[in-house]
Picture 1 (cartoon, protein in one colour):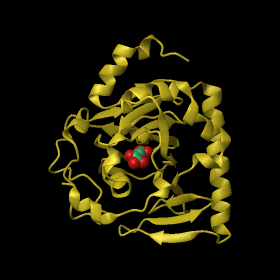
Picture 2 (cartoon, rainbow, N blue to C red):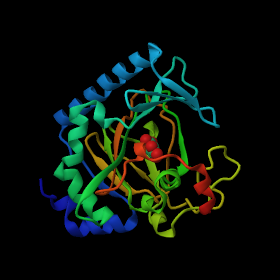
Picture 3 (cartoon, helix red, strand yellow):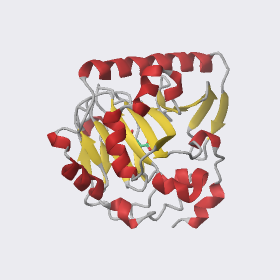
Length: 268
Ligand SMILES: O=C(O)CCC(=O)C(=O)O
């Protein structure tokens, strides 16, 4: 599909400049529903394996529990009772309909503009579930520090396409983005926070943040240096999304790179 008038090259360039591109209803209703069904089927299969005791467990310094099985990491909501999954990553290898999106021109054409290269490669993928009533906050952060610990300076060239599987509104945990924040480079991090990955919001100007509401099937794209957060989902409606993180072709994927926490000392 070519870009339609709403998503004309000029408008796209302006959106790239401000640090995020929103493509409303890029995917049709039926295909969005099919993606949601595939996401639920993957989740059921993977959590079944976890229940059978086949996963390797890690607990992060902030108390978040992660379990690895089938080449994906299951990240649990820290507070949800009964337990609920916060995210699965990487995930597209677990369902062909999710995997096909890597080669979908509707996504790759604008993504090439953001990354600025001809040939795109995969970096990683994630399903964020943000379930009704229990989906928790993502604090202010840039994706960059985490990716930098794995990929080093090449992390600058990674950008995300976030495919919304449900309608996104301010009250079910829409993303808040600080326009132009990517241009300032790595933001000061909160040294008191155990992961060392979050932005210090007291030392970063987040006052101009915008809330990105969009219908299901919309796609939001942004590079790893954009400062963003999302609130908890206190509604009765899930806010699921599939994130595809692209990079220039020919580079190793996130899953093949060791996490080197000592690299954080290179960053502010
Ligand atoms: O899904 C969300 O609300 C936050 C996504 C995000 O920032 C992340 O997964 O790093």
